[in-house]
Length: 478
Length: 122
Image 1 (cartoon, rainbow over the protein chains, first blue to last red):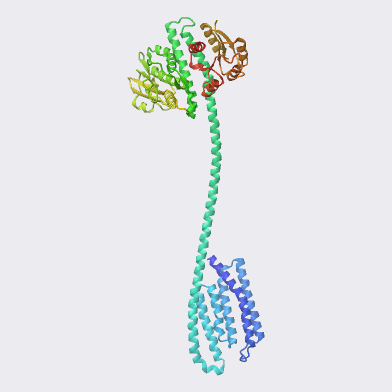
Image 2 (image 1 turned 120 degrees about the vertical axis):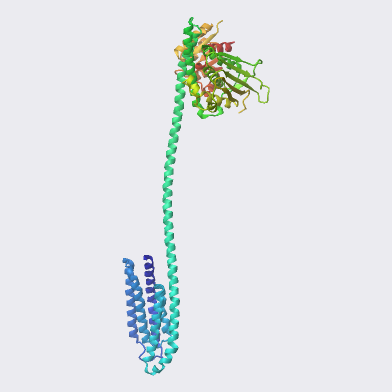
């Protein structure tokens, strides 16, 4: 409502401004009339009267102007309608008065009354122009009729004049009124559509502004998150490095005294410091095995730590006589197997093996782990047999096969699926050896894979297990 | 003539154990307890083999190794690095600096070490 009132106000202001000009035009026409020689006495407005009328009309327009500005300034939009109506009304009165006084310009009369009609199209909706047209029509007719009636000579012309002029004039004004009101409505309609569009667009703009604000906010949040994450990542990396260092330092520090312990036990058990009773020997062997176990765990921890950055570059490949390596590993376990009365046997191929490219330290770990497991999980009086097979030595991809077979507790079907997983320990294994890392097979298999070999097993619970290793003779060139 | 072995090891217990074992085996033994003195003692004693620990006070085993290989007297002496450091980088570095072999103390018994020495000096 406010918008349409505003529009109306501006329309009023436009009319007021236009009026300044046509008041002057009308005055000019009036002066023209004065110079017309064929005027009839008494029906001509003298120049003074015209000037007075001119001044009066200017004053009225000024009044309208001030009122319009007041409305604009103070927002008295309720008064706009009144302003429009008064403008038209005053104008009609003025025109009527002038026309009546200057009856000569009959032809001008209907034309001049178009002015308020046009104004009403701009100022009003449908009804206004129709009303103004009707009123104009009436006034025009009135002027014509009175012009005739007041002139005694022409009074006899009244009826013919009435019939020939009034009817057409009335009809014409009605038609004009119809079109005017249609036009006014069209204008208003257009205006409303434009306003609606503007409002809609303003709404869109506001929406977009909102979205933009939200986006900026989100961007800010994302940026903060990014900074947070970067910091967190840095912290994690620092922690990771610290953890690795800690494990490395600790395990290295542990290894020295562990070596000392192991050597001491070894020395005494081999009776190099004097003879031992069987009981003494048995207990010392247990001590030695424990020391060996700790060393194995420490080694595993060290390697599990470094396996976080798994890649083949960690392998230190050298050419090794495998049989020697295996022998030295098996040798480590003589005490352990003897104490459980387990037969520990190694079956080597008849021919000498060629040198194999491998990482001796890592492969040693794998062999130690497999043999350790075999002995650990085999009850007393069992057997652990290690076989080296060179059947595939002369193939396209030469390799050796190693089998570590035991007569132990075996691995159950459910456990078999998970046995290579990091930290996984089967229940029956835990029963025998409560302390175990569950890392041995995980690391072992990883090492063998990095040697481009394979590791798998076959097992029957209660009967025994066979672990198979394949190691290629050569490693691919880097 | 008995072969001479120089043991460079800072841990007293391990040093005396190793020395005793070597003497039992018939070797003559010289000892150095830190990196500083190791090269000097090596040059003075001219051992047939050096057992070198890497974690030493003062200058470390790598440095000793480097200096030994730079010195006329010891540049061809077999050196077995004999340590509890076992990471691949360490082994590489030692081999790169001229070590003949690398043993991790905790993984071998003294007997293994003796065997290694015997083999190297054959």
